Length: 350
Image (cartoon, rainbow, N blue to C red; front, side, top):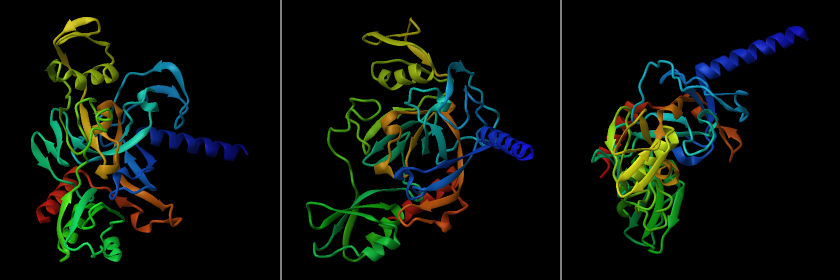
């Protein structure tokens, strides 16, 4: 009994050290990253790439229990790579009110980097006014226009292209499909298809849901929004205050107040400028029309980032109750490869 107890205790200590300092394991619970990451994928997430973030609270590891009021300063050990556009990152969900390392874990794709300006125009992401096409495996809704309302999209060919969500519209010649750019390229070549266009969300119902609120933004027409950068000093204005104030108060720990037209107080002192203390990132899901991301709740602070998703070590299909053997130990593309493949797909699409 003592030998078994010592062995289990030693194993528990090793697992605790490894998962705290080197890597961690996470499961994909929602379809916001499909088709690249599926519900039921189990991810190996490296903490070493960007540098291990040391614990910020004192509590029981891998549980929600911690000692209230006990906080450690944010410390990140040196890593061997920088965060790149296109990286799939795991981070603590920023809007939650708990301590950083006790917040829920999210995974999204890095789209906007510190110091850049991000916007979405008719579903196309713009970085500093330059278009950024869908990356490899990203999907969104499209309108498919048929030449004759009697034609039906063949389900077998749609399955081959990975298209499972097909929705009719009021126009019998038009259907809405959820597909990747490569699937749309193949469908556009079918002789009974006139054309394919991105589906653009319309209406005023999104105004209160977007970040910042009240600007008439939608998921498909958003911004422009500047992304804060460490050491950057900005002039505070009525226009940018709704963008920067949540960052200053929520993530940088200052008290904020707007006392008049273009008059602001930070920590009780009147000021017209502010210098950011850390980098921020704009993250979006690969499944653009089914993702609650930075368009809705804002930026990802660097101190919220846990690590980089490297590969899926297991995958379970809950519908068939079977493992997805083809996804076991499947690598996740890093930023450079991800966008290179996406640009190739975009160039090949009519």
